[in-house]
Image (cartoon, rainbow, N blue to C red):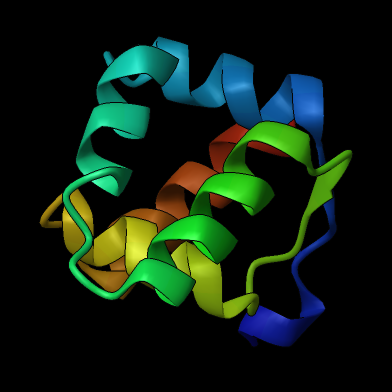
Length: 84
């Protein structure tokens, strides 16, 4: 099912994060706490530079874990943000 979610534009993703009560600076701070340098840099690159976001991208799972969310909560976010 998750592979069938639409790509989110950068606007949809960032607006969704804001509507869910997160600031991009807070998420960047959490990404900086990732111990593995490659994972940290790859996740930050995706967060800051992506023009669209794919639900099944591994960096989404990393961000999910950083925020202490479940897959179901991220699915709800994705559905919400896809309608922005």
